[in-house]
Amino acid sequence: MRSSNPVFSRRGFSRDNGGYAGFDAQPQQAGTNPYATNPYAADPTTGMPQAPARANVMTMDDVVSRTAMTLGTLIVTATLAWVALPVDPDNLGVSYGIGIGAALVAFVLVIIQSFKRKPSPGLILAYAAFEGVFLGVISAAVSTYIGPGVVMQAVMGTMCVFAAVLFAYKMRWIRVTRRFYGFVMAATLGFILLMLVNTLFAFIGGGDGLGFRSGGLGLLFGAIGVILGACFLALDFKQVEDGIAYGAPREEAWLAAFALTMTLVWIYVEMLRIFAILSGDD
Image (cartoon, rainbow, N blue to C red; front, side, top):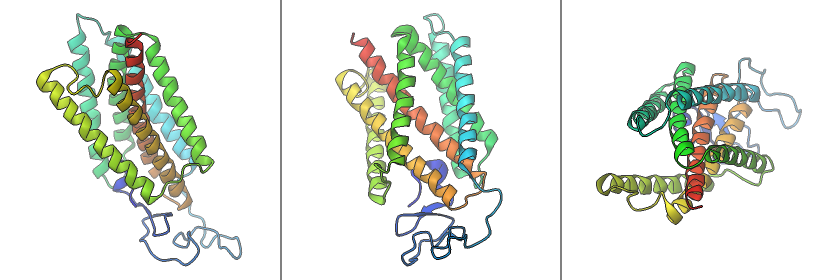
């Protein structure tokens, strides 16, 4: 099963028929040992590694440090955009234009990275920088026109979702299986198609199109978006765990950071929408 995340889907992360992962390993029947395709796993009879440990392999410290770098870049550029591009009636169009332009550049960078055979740290950090500009603009707009507390609520909500999913994953309350993967991908596809239709109707008729992003329906679909984001976090955690267990190259930590950053951005945007709707109803 390939990763749900586009930056992983063209890489070597895959799972064999027993539902376990390997790095550039072909699915095969491996008896009763689910890690038999991993030459670096411990021998079940001796407890010793089956092959000498390789150097320069991905570790959790690598994933944490790369993720901190991408999120740090995103936060810095978001803060700069918030300060340098004040959202007011006189320059609203300019600010929104820069924000949308930055989002489009970030999207193009995601597509480019997904087709590259190796991760590019510069490209990934550039994505984080442009995504930060977009988030800074929309966050400033929400803070100005709805309330300054909404942004902090969205940040705290995103952090809580991340912590809750990580805890549930570590406790094995969430089990990433083929069925889980298939459900998440199908639900996400349906969600994205509905949002595209809503955007099309909004472009043609103005307002919020079919009303999927405001009012009661907006809250419902915002909650669905957060749940899907939480599911993607679980998939990302599984890919990181599998990459470490199967001796993925250290450079793959950049892809893990890339995937986690994109998922957190998704959750934050949905959280921002939910709290903006709730604050607007007060």
